[in-house]
Length: 234
Length: 234
Image (cartoon, rainbow over all chains, first blue to last red; front, side, top):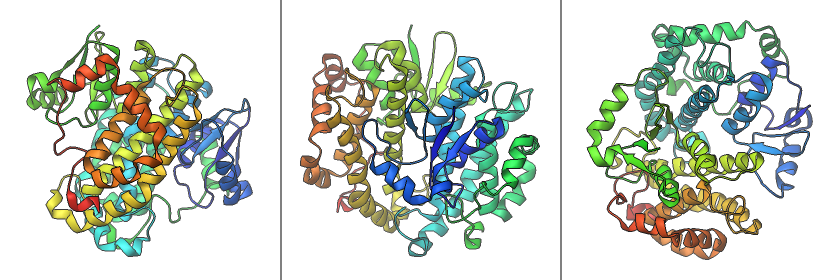
């Protein structure tokens, strides 16, 4: 089994939420955009017939099934490759947490593109200043406080169940993205969220994940979902 | 089996995506917010212990399981009550479509609250005018064209499989919401999307769904996700 991952090269983006658990679990996949360029992704999307995806990331299985939307991809891969709990009820909670992480990711993107995802940041700067202010003051504490309460209540220290899951890799990437985009603010509030920072640190010690993050397969921060504009960091 | 639905009263909101398939399939549920008021929802959320929800809607089962996030709730209920396909691959595609509908719902909300979901519309009007313009010109054609292509390609005329599913009820509500919020624009482009409008009309002829929509259980449009501000309709 080798999956094909379709996602834009040059940024971690939403594709990273799929790459991380695959890498950490040692599951083979071809990263088509990174290996063959963005044009390969465009061609792939244009050639879709039945069950098309609205957007990437998507994965294709050896049986030719195409699955898109991050939470949908992870809910499929997790139980097959051991990065989701065996218990169905726990898996539903994991999916719920993943969707809440996705909501925060969407709001983080909205801070620099509040008016139009198709227009330049420079053309929506006043709006972005207001949106980022609200995100820093209101949304970061609300979302991170929620994730903190879940990790702190779980004896294992992970988000769900007694082993790491795709929820943990997603939360680690979210924390890294927020720290890249809002370094001053994240440093200021880090002490408020010890359980999720500890969870992220433990995950970073997984041999395969560490090797991936140090490799050139790992896409650098660039103008993706998480962007560092100092003026948006307050 | 009687589910308890927790959601804010007075608006259809995200709760409506849960109510519609339950109503259309004749599944019993207690609409706690509508029946007991918003304070009951607040008390419920504050009393959450393990596996808390970040936000409503959530449902509680007879076994005491609490499930939140619309797509997660629907993925759970659909196979149990006959409003999701029996085939696992089709169910994954349905989940994918539901998540894409959720993305468009989020963008529709963003048109009137581009800067802060916690601030008044009146305090972000210039930003809202720009966001709504982009939504009307770019995002409505892109999203609705995608849903249209799926329904038009399916011999049954439904989004996925050969019977109505929660994807269809969600798409109907999305079309109704867009038509409420952007009546001029939606009238202008209606002819571009015959398959999804036909799907919505067929669904409205289901006896139970029609009875629900005519009943006083059905929450009126108000200042929820979909809002009608004439200046945002172009």
